[in-house]
Image 1 (cartoon, helix red, strand yellow):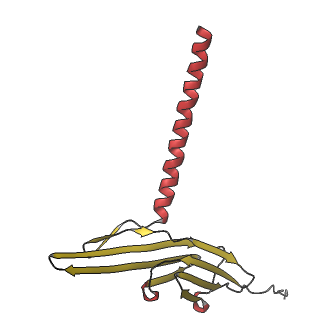
Image 2 (cartoon, one colour):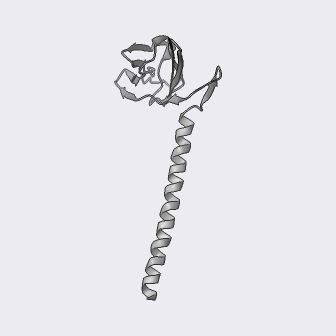
Image 3 (tube, one colour):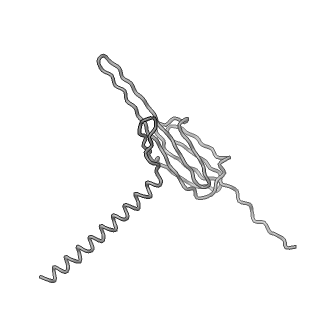
Length: 156
């Protein structure tokens, strides 16, 4: 009987340790996710929550290309900023709908924002960057900064 008690005690201890490690991992992931997202903002008395848009990033020898999905956003409502090797994409969707019928009135407001901060693999030249937006897909082309070629220095 004592033999089984010892086994169950060991299993219980291992399960508690596993739960502790899982809890710590989820807390760390949650903190990392919160750092990436901006908090809910209050704008004009309405809550605007931010969603992380889906993003593809690839690199060619000359440039970094970022493709982001921003459904329902107008081109005028998109902001793109490059700070050092960080790219920030912000967009906001605002819709208001009013239905007025006999003895029935309804007004709905919809506010939603997109926000994503991306660390770029190399330094880019924001002055030559190009962005296009079509059918809810934003494409950003960021030319890489050209590093000076190797140069030999003569000793005097």
